[in-house]
Image 1 (tube, rainbow, N blue to C red):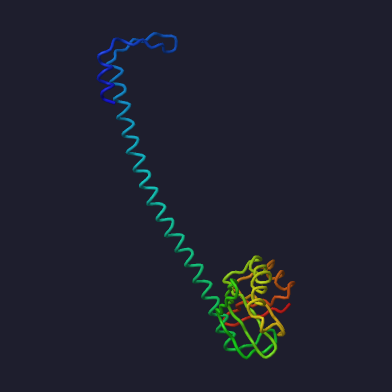
Image 2 (tube, one colour; image 1 turned 30 degrees about the vertical axis):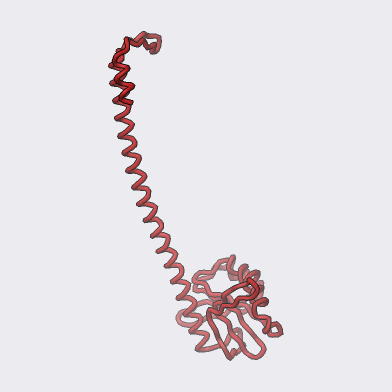
Length: 201
C-alpha cells in the first residue's frame, strides 16, 4: 500500500469533478488522504476486534446463566418428586386403592426403547404410574397419556392384566391442565400444606 502512495506522489495533478465544480488536488494530497483512510480502517478493525472479544465474553456469561436456570428447574422438579414420593411411601393409598410397593425413578430399556417413570405404585392387581412436576402444564398431561403410558405398556408387559391408573403430581396445576387430566381419567395430586390432595376423575 505504501508503495502505491510513494508512486502517487511522483505523478502530476488530478482533476476531480465534484458537484459540477472542478477541484484540483496533487498526488501528494491524494496519497495523504489514502494514508488517513488506511489509519481510520486500522482503528475500525481494532474496535471490531474488541467488540468481537466482548461478544465472546457475553456468550460465555449467557451460557452460564442458562446452566444456572436449568439447574434451578431441575432442583424444583427434584423437590416435587421427593415430596410426593415420601408422602406416598408413608401412606401408599391413591384414589382409595392401597398399594404394597412404591418405586421411584425406575428405568427400563427394551429393543431400543428406553424410558424412566417418576413414581410407580403396585399391588396384586393395580399399578399406578405417576408423573411428577413442580408446575404442570397441558403438554405434561399429553406426554403422560400419549408417550409415557404407551412406553410403560411396551416396557412392562408383565403388568398388562393389571388395572392401570395414571396420575399427575404437581405443586401447581392450572385449571385447564387439571380439567384435561381429569377428563382423560388421570388422577391429580396436589400439594396442600404438608399433605397431598387427591382429585379423582
